[in-house]
Image (tube, rainbow over all chains, first blue to last red; front, side, top):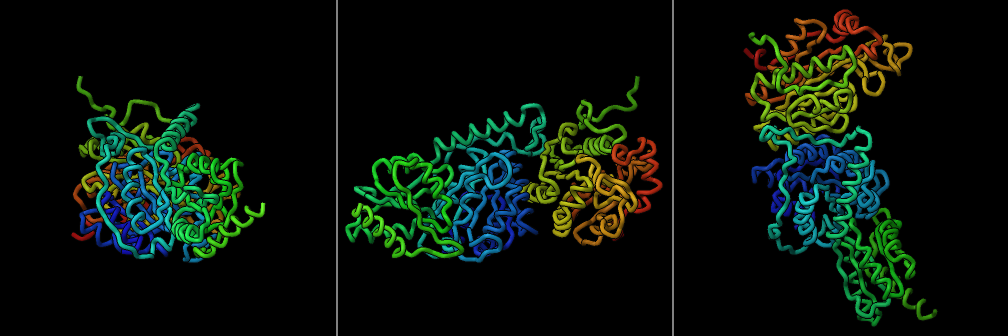
Length: 349
Length: 250
């Protein structure tokens, strides 16, 4: 199975009630897969007229308490930002998958990580966050999807899975099993048609004096709870490391090969891989910076996660950067070359 | 004493924020009466637009959601497909439905979504200060057509209902008005029919367009505004049933 199909089958396992999407490369395997699997399971599949419509169909389905998702790639995700802001304001649970491609504009259809800022800073208008998961393998495409609906329902929030064209297209062995049942809050806010004579209203408009500020405070308190409880990251071969690479998604996968090769050559190098990009594993990276002399951030962008790494390191160690853009993919050799240079220049110091 | 007339329980007992002479109050009342008479208050979900009626959920006692400008038919699609036994309606103005939400309404009809759409056409953007709407008639002065709307440069009034009636997925389209009592009664009958079709599982979208007065931004008295619908607006937007698949087939 390719990563996109693994994610799609995981959505079925996760109890996704409805999928809405508009075609865009390199994520089309998701909708093609779900176009037969969803109806076969008696669930809803709609190819919408636009990404604007897709995210608003998600909005409608989610408002009735159903598990709803959409998937797209960078330009389409830009179109969804309006809806994602409304989802945040209305506190509706939803899952959005972004199989990133090169930008800006129409860009190209090669893998990229240029949407990190858009994903981790909210993306649309207003002061909000979405939980952002960064899978790094076909297995994790499925695992993140399985986790996403639980997180969304637990916190009444949008979860964005930030993958890229390479993860979406590549094939790997996969084990699929439902996640253990997680107790989740009842959806007593859902619009089901005046259940029990009580009117439910879902809205993002707060006109009363101070009402919107109170609503924002409530949202921010929720975001702090998520930061406290939902940070996920992987630490790899950090024992005795003098250089620590920070990378996510497919770049982390490549960096892992570079780390293994480096270790074989006797270079003390390790890897920290954020799995949640928001909430960001700042504590883990800050702790590492106390111990390790040099941090190298590698991304398929001009340096977006780099800002979060620098904030986490807080000046305790030099933070260097290696990036490729516009669909360029770093090789393990390229990364290893960077790591070698860093260890050499450190010895010269 | 026998009660001859009372407030429907689907309409909450509170004052509205609408301007004097606005048509929304009448339209809300008709909608609430229809929901009561059909006995569907406990299975109806309504969608409020962006526009003057954004706070419709404060007045209508049914489960409601407020959505992004123009997107109501997409939101309604998500709701209805996941909950086929619920009755879903959107309540949209002309800016919402005929300008920013053109794609959503056309495609909801095109997909034959089983929805009921109440389309309030008052020929201006009311909430934002009376700007030109797609439905503004030629010569009409608005905040953004100070010399009156000219076809050259500002386009012609958009007849969305006629456009939608062409689509096989739109099964019932009727244009009504609130300009006098018989017309108001007809508007209610049309709304009721649009809901009944959905309740019967009729295979498509029902839309009732309602020509509704906006005395504030037409800069007229409420009674002149009613007369203006009769004399001018209904000439551009002819009243009547544009399509009823159920009746047309017989």
